[in-house]
Amino acid sequence: MGGLTHLDENGAARMVDVGGKQASKRVAVASGRIAMSRKALDAIREGDTPKGDVLAAARIAGIMAAKRTGELIPLCHPLALEAVHVDFALENDAITVTAQASLTGRTGVEMEAMVAVSTALLTIYDMAKSIDKAMVIGEIRLIEKRGGKSGDWRASDLGA
Image 1: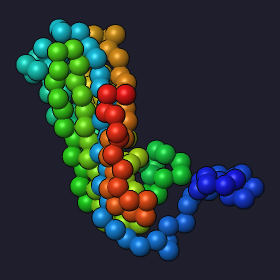
Image 2 (image 1 turned 90 degrees about the vertical axis):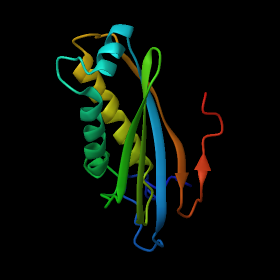
Image 3 (image 1 turned 180 degrees about the horizontal axis):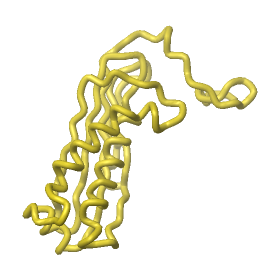
């Protein structure tokens, strides 16, 4: 099964052995978006939701989730993250979540950044669903990764 690192020669799933790889500084940035009604966005912006400070809870949830990615995604390595940052941009009809995960290690942190974004978005939904059940989560993607054997990568078209 040429090129698929998570499959052995018989096509069975496996965890990649990173023991022989050189440790290096690795960083990944991911983002996602939750579209919502003006009423829900205003309530979040003003801190006037039934469940409290939505963005504070979403930030903590994203950070906690990044730290547990190895327990959630079957073939991911458990990693000793050095930093996770979760930030928000409030738009006219949505909130964009951006997460950055980093460490010095033998494998990348792309999944940790995307799990942080996904969990932060789900937390926003959970905390504001009494105001707007029709919110739509989407556009979760890797924006950038730095370090490791494959080098640096950045999404060429952030609008796609």
